[in-house]
Length: 473
Image (spheres, rainbow, N blue to C red):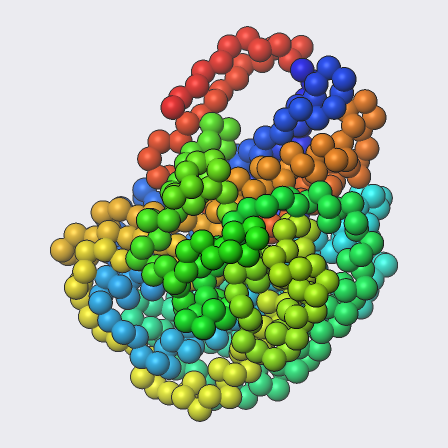
């Protein structure tokens, strides 16, 4: 059996490779998605004071440190058994929305736009930011401007753009500066205009990709995301909802503390990335997806006027439940608009500049769970501590992990559609990588250690012949 290896999936956060195995006729027989890095945060935090966890876990990733800080702080709030001040909750949601804006801008404009705006078969030498600057300079400037806005809001709130220490157990460590509030309010209209221009651009472009829409993870799965009591989209707070591929309600208003009743975690022999599954259905049939596409599938509405109007049009075009993973890009833009509109609502609230922003307490519970929606999907931090507050156990269930089974199945689907082993085209292999990019994976976030990870090690000679093999379970 022959194989094709994509050693480095480009334009993603972290490191992964893809193996495509061909049958004797040169057709795709199987594929494997290998996440080749391991970081082990869940083990080396053991023994640390729980209140250090937000700062430690924010170092998992430089793209979404705010997401980890928030999920971690919510788990610590639970250990402290406190209700954080109202202003603190609003400030946390505000920085979270800014994180969504900058992260979605990075994903759409910087990582995927070379494929989406230049074309999957565009010259790979210039299918990048340089090519965008030549062919679509206005769109590239919009992308840079939108990400800059999100990063600047984070910096105004937290005094740092990357790995800020502002979000803490019990709330945040300083109030919002009124000048920062006014400055952000003056800049919001320009940011909203960028997203609306980009939505118009993408709505006029998306139909140019019928083959990709048909084959990029276009299969039925369940979907999971946070919703409010009224079923509206929630990014910072809410309960879990699972819906089926037909839109049927599978589980609703699942409290964060009960996540393990519904979510199991498997390990795979060829990857450090865990494979969560819907526990009542079992592994591997309990496949579900998270992230922008899934959140729009599970929510009844967004809850802000502009985003709701865009969501209605999106559903008119593609249905109430959108299956194709190619539409993660479209959903990401709708969410960016929602995040900006929600920022407007929060900043317009006079209580946002309140000065009571942190609750203080010690260890009042030996276990805590924090759940938020990170830009890439549902993020769960689950901690256990001793009576002195030292970490005894941690488990992180990260968005890219939730999507692991769907990404693997999607790679096989797109490879079978586009890859011909008898005449390999660069554009075909690029589509395999583009399927991964559609999920906007964060592999630094997703590779941790819970239990023993089974591994397969192969020794091959210079001619590719298998000489020896060792497998650990």
